[in-house]
Length: 74
Image (tube, rainbow, N blue to C red; front, side, top):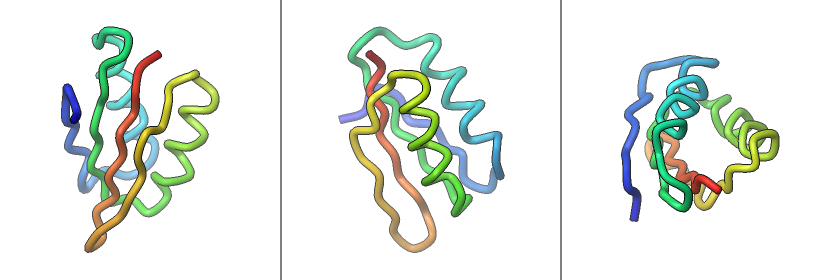
């Protein structure tokens, strides 16, 4: 269950990543950020973002053109 949900639908790269980075900055360790995005490139972007920042990509899925991610802050 996510602690915070970020609506990044309609935004293109790099805005979903930048908004997620800003939201994670204010979160406590162990909390989960859920992101909804419509940019098809966001899947690769969030994988790279998590591997570079040490955040854990807990979930990545897509339904009806909406990409859903859950990221756990270390």
